[in-house]
Amino acid sequence: MFGSLKQLFHRTPQADWPAVPAGQRVYAVGDIHGHLDLFDAMLAAIAADDAGSTPAHTTIVLLGDLIDRGPDSAGVIARARELQRVGRTRILAGNHEEMFLLSLTDREVFRSLLRHGGRETALSFGVDRAAFNAAELEEAQALVRDAVPDDVIAWLRGLEDMVTIGDYLFVHAGINPAVPVAEQQTRDLRWIREPFLSHGAPHPLMVVHGHTIVPEPVERVNRIGIDTGAYRTGRLTALRLEGADRRFMEATVD
Image (cartoon, rainbow, N blue to C red; front, side, top):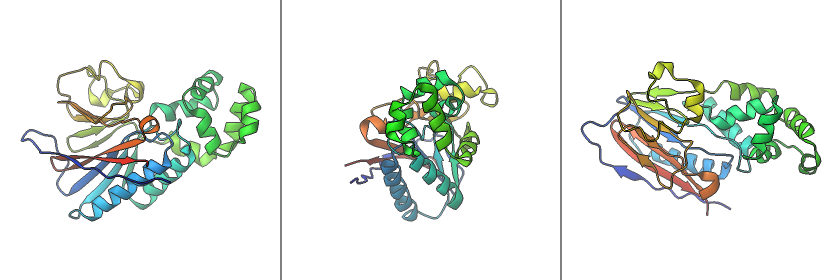
């Protein structure tokens, strides 16, 4: 059993705060990591909040790392694809999506992924637990390749690396502060920590990111981090943006 706890932490807008365009509302959701229970709880909270607010063009942005570590990566992917079919949803590729795709053909990446939650992803796609546990590395890799549908692989390959809405830039990990936004490298967008996290000067856009786990949402002059470690803490965080207004929402498992 699980329950959702919706908490809205409201920050009073300042005169110089970034904003999304008038008439738009954005919900950015942090790293889900295979926790369909938390994802569904957050989607229910978002739906209720959106329905109770003034009409707007609403966009949901998933910041990547939908998979691995948690028990139902396949279910999270299915739910995310359903969201894309019925509403305006933008989905970023995280470093775990990158690793998963590479692991299908690269044995060493597959070995590394198993240490970072890849086994749970394999089982969520219906790989037999006993067969997987008994398999040698190459055999286990083949089991995963056979279990994951081609359309899922194609969908993962088509995920975005960055989304810009108004004054906000949404990425999985961050950006290289020394490189213009239009020239960012994929590896930085999916993997970077330093020098991004400690950079103190403003970026051209306010960067919203996940990837680095924090106990509470982090707000800096140049970035907002919302990965509260769903797989570790049982807390999934989202950022709600409308105009210059900024709120944080949290879903938890009972």
